Length: 340
Image (cartoon, rainbow, N blue to C red; front, side, top):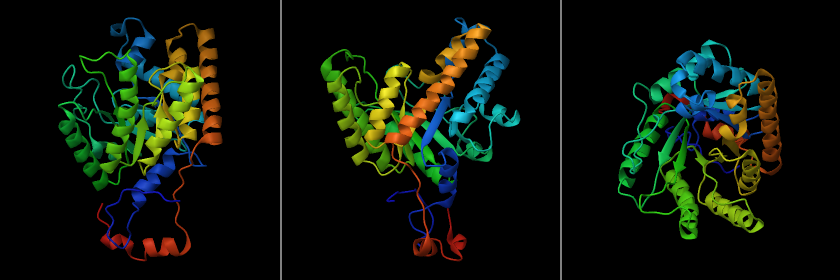
């Protein structure tokens, strides 16, 4: 399998970082697919718990997240969690099965500037703490438009984070987000077409910085057969310009729409999904005990269905070295010259 894993190993072991490789082995399924549930939401999660999020305290938020994690863990290969409400808490509460991987977001809620969308990293948190707590992967939400004045600032953020993660053998997942500028009308066909190209371009640019994986917006529309065909072409073009695995995000769309997006993305080269509200929204927002039980069961069923779609159409990510390739890439004393 022709796969690039970022590495700062010396020339005796080019092209592979065993630390990152092991981390990826923990977040994929046994057969190599990213079946990941995102639960790193903050205020938008609390808003689902109560129409007035100010009434939702820390304890209620934590307990709600842990309950959901326990309920759906059997169907996921990993969870993406936030440090404020879930990451250390799920470890301390033994709420995460040993077979399930752990990813952590590094950005803060919101960003610098109303229109600039400059990434703001979480204060008091960072790559070293993510590694020390035992998380397998670091995730960055990266607002990026090359035609905006903040593009160079965003490139700098990504460049620094790539270097930090490489030094720690910590895989970095980047989530490029295309966004509307103040003078643009997102309802116009020209803007929608530009957005699709922007999603592809942003993924290609992030790839060139040396990221380890991409979490991508769906590049298109699934409301018509024509739109689905165009979206499949866009996914294939996105895939052709990167050499790392990628997954599709849900962006809170309806489950039926997301299910179709997963199928198209996987046919276009994706290795799975990393999704949140489209799967579990009803399980969190429903407060009647009887209804909640059925809503949680529905979330589990949705995950199982997405997993089947991914396995049918997706590209497994199972980089492996055996025999001569293994011996030559990792010779007897490889560790003496290893400098992550």
